[in-house]
Length: 434
Image 1: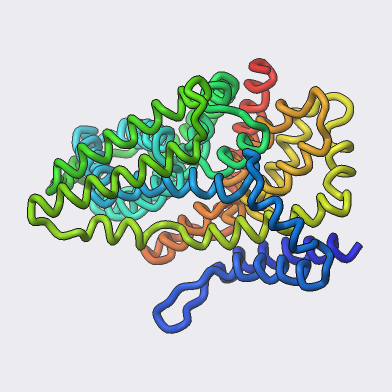
Image 2: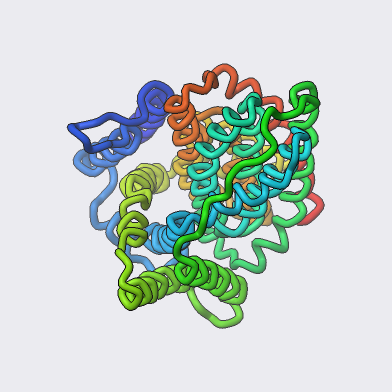
C-alpha cells in the first residue's frame, strides 16, 4: 500500500506543480518543479526499501527495448538534429517564406500554417515545432492585425496530432513502441490511418470553431522571411535528418537498434558541423546553443517516473490494473480514453511509462492494440490541458511572455472541443487498422 500512496501523491503533486508553477529560478538557473517532485518520490521509494536498488539497476542495464537509457538516447539524438536545424534558421525561414505568399485571406493563412506545422512535426519533433512557431505566430499576428488564438490553437493541435504518424514524432511514441518491440515500419503501417483520421477531424473542427474570425482579412499581406546565413550547415542538418529517418525506417531489416542510429546520426552531425564551420572560420555558436537547448530536465523526469512505475510493477499493482483494462471488449477505446485522461493528470510522459508497464502486464491478444491506443492517448491528450504534455507547459509559458490572453479555462475549452472528437476518430482509425 505504501508504494501506491507514494506514487499517487507524487502524481498529484506533479499535476499541481505543472498547473501552478512548473518552473522556479535560483539566481539565473531555471529548475523544473515537476521533475524535482518526481525525483523526490522515486528517492522515497528507494530509501524506504519499497524498490530494491539492485532491481532498479538490473532494469536500467537490461538489453531490452524498454531500457529507458536507450529510449533517452533515441529521443535526444533526434531532438539534437531538430534543434540544430532550428539554430540554422530553417523553421523560421520556412514559416516566413510560406506565409509571405498567403495574401490577405485568413482562411488561406490558417490552412497554410496548419499544413506547414503538420509536415514539420512529422519529421522533426512536436516540442521543437511548438517552441519555434509559437513566438513566430505571436509576432506575425500582431503585425498582421489578427487574433493570434486561432493560429496558436491550430499550431498546437497540428503539432500534437500529426506527431503520431512516425515513431520519432514524440518521446511517448518512442517509449511505448520500444516497450512493445515495435519497429519503425510496423509502427507506420498501423498509425498512418489513425493519424490521418485525427488530422482531418481536428482541421475541420478548428475551421468550425474559428470560422467567423477567419472570414476577416489581414491588415498586412506579408512577413519577412528570415535569411539563411549558413547554407552548408542547413544542408548538413537536412541531410542528417533524412538519412537518419530512412535508416530508422529500415532498421528492422538491417538489424540495427534505433537508439544507435539516432545517436550516431547526431554525433555525425556535430562532428561534421564542427569541421565545416572551422574550415569556413565561423563560430561554433549553433553547436553551443544546440547543446544548451536540449531538454535535460526530461532525463531525471523520465528516470524517476520509470522508478515509480517499476515499483508498482514490483509489488504487482500494474498487473492488476492491466488485467482489468485489457479484459473484455472495446480495449482500444478503454485504453485510448483512459490514457488521454491520465495524461492530463500526471503528464503524458509518466502516463506512457505507467501504461507501458500496465499493458505489458495485461498481455494477451489485446497487447499491441492497447499499446497503439495509449500512443494515441499520449499525443492527443496534450491538446486537452497544459498538464497533458511538456509542450503544453512550454506553450503557455511563451504566451505569458507575449501577453496573449490564453487562460487554463480557455485552453481546456478549446482542448475539449477539438481533442475529444479527434481522439474518437483516431481510435476508430486504429480499430480499422488492427
